Image 1 (cartoon, rainbow, N blue to C red):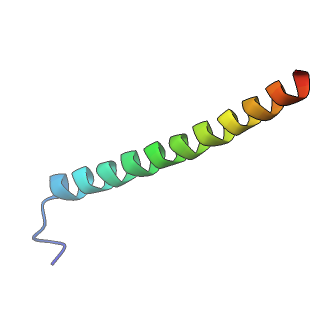
Image 2 (image 1 turned 90 degrees about the vertical axis):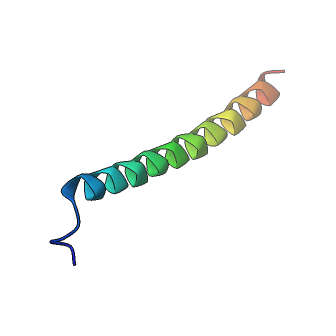
Amino acid sequence: MSATMPVELLAAGSTTLGAAYAAALQLLDARRSRVRVQQLSRTIT
């Protein structure tokens, strides 16, 4: 099955998966840092 599948297709699929995973991680990280900034501004004011 995998032998008949083009390598380009496999590479494109894995790249898309990796990109989506990286985007999700960045979103989570941005959300976390936003909360951190809000907490910092609350303690400062």
